[in-house]
Length: 467
Image 1 (cartoon, rainbow, N blue to C red):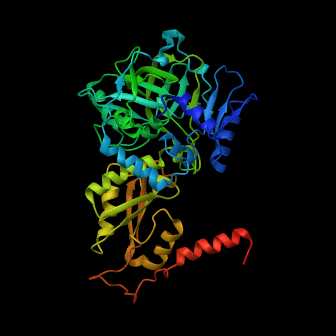
Image 2: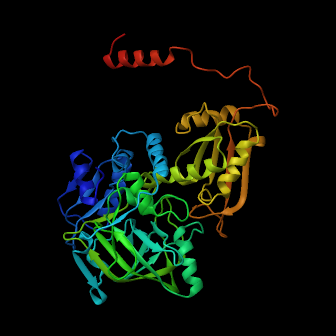
């Protein structure tokens, strides 16, 4: 059965040897950030820090920081390959929607704070990196509603703490569904209701960071992945559905009449972002479970937890979008640093198709942030960096097969120009084909028959130390 909440997830991780409890008291700074960095560097266990100096509430970090645990989050075996995990996400598209259900048993309402009792500083919200502008809620699931329909969006956007009841919310990408909702409220001159869930079952945070079609409900897609409906309850002070078993829920309004300067923040690119003018979230109520657990996300130089958590789910969304436009695309893969470097595998019928696909990706809603695209043939495993580099070396001529698009949207690219623009790079590493021969090898070398058999024999004898 899928996990109902964060506590079910923690129990499974502990039973599988994927959770480390730290009983000794640690500091909020620098220990939390250092621990998160260490976990990601060694792809170690998730951390449950039982005692944070100055707080009564424990903290978890790194729970999604391995591909073993992203598999387990979907109730798969922890050695499930990245390719198969992507397929699991894609298969859930065919099951969508599995409608969420409203329940009366809502542990997230066990404690309710309103008005002057609202105080974010009771929670161990860390400053993960030394030069972050403030304490950041790094794993928030921001819940909003389209004012003209029943479309609910659940997205993950970093939140900089401004005070006990105020945060900034970083929403700068034009393609974010959050922005679709906010724009309508801005045009009407009205504040937008928002709720923020912290600490849920493990699939919902992964979906909050991925790309699904506009108009889709992340709760209903989570149900399709989990094969069981999400459990929701109406917010205490906002007309929004929130996860009934969340550890913590923040409720309030996003002000449309004021902005603050947000950042810098150590982003998933491995560099500090700049500063952005962002809207302000005013918190009117906090509800939370008895003995709540604060769940946070380690963000920093790749691989970091945000990469593990969203890499495969985001790739599934991107693959669904591009294959609808180009059915000759067979598979996509991400290479470091994740969103900025994608490999496209396809069955190409014309020498011009790889460049068409590059432009299609860059022109798509969710491919706009990709900085480098490498296109390969079906005989190249897009997940294997060595094979991809070989294809570039053997099948690419820089003067004919390199595409550059200057003046493109820079997003969080740390090397972007002062005007927020970046240059896209495309590499056509596909084989020559008629009628556009550049060079025609006699034949492409293929492994001899029984090669795989001999690999197994050699490895077996090697491990035995024999001859």
